[in-house]
Image 1 (tube, rainbow, N blue to C red):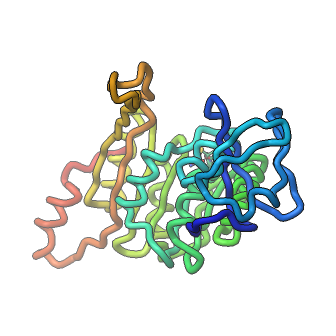
Image 2: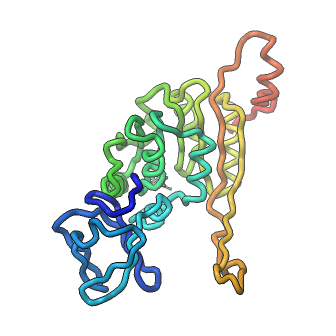
Image 3: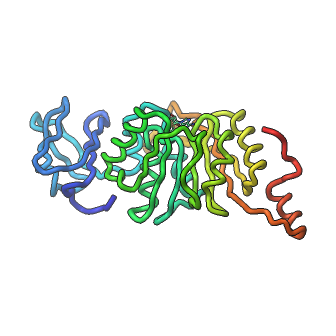
Length: 281
Ligand SMILES: C[S@@+](CC[C@H](N)C(=O)[O-])C[C@H]1O[C@@H](n2cnc3c(N)ncnc32)[C@H](O)[C@@H]1O
């Protein structure tokens, strides 16, 4: 998303009305924004300053804003659980996802992670996203098209039990119920040193995933969870909001390494992977 002073044709725009009701759409000359709060021709929005107020034909007021990635993801039409911006932001950092990379993921779900990753790898990068459910994949495709990022993504309809087509990927993010069942296949797609990440809601899944990572020689493993607490913004009564999302999932990160047969490397490999503790999953 390019940032500018004024709204331009082709930009994603966000209108925020009373009670924070908001609408995200692409500006197209000749088209009309329409809601129960009235109609605004896009031609009136194109050229308006971002942050300014605009009014529908019934006089309903809105602020015109450029949506952030977080706005886009929170607004995403979904039929699956999606990853939250708080987790996605950290995942992108931890997995070193950057311009020009090839990054794989499964499952695509509603495409929240796909949108964030395809923005991060830029026009020269590529995301390959696997999903087994055709309806879910179609929704994700629409979601990516809506924000103009679909050309950066290869959508593949497949149960990942059958494995992956790619090799030498820079990173792999796995968001399926049983990630521990696919660690071997993931290893085969990653370049040496490549990044692996996954998110799971329960300890039970994390435990199995940790054994699978050891078994398949992933190292530099990290497990964490992120908690985000919002505050009411009245400066005279600054305090936390009444409700919070207490749990989204546990994040597990690791890197594919290639232990050497040279006995001089054994001590470090044991220290990093803990091979001697390996057990069956
Ligand atoms: C929680 S959703 C992923 C959400 C996605 N990361 C997002 O941010 O929108 C999990 C998805 O994985 C897909 N899935 C589960 N097992 C799979 C498998 N073995 N092969 C391919 N896709 C699978 C499901 O159909 C579902 O759409």
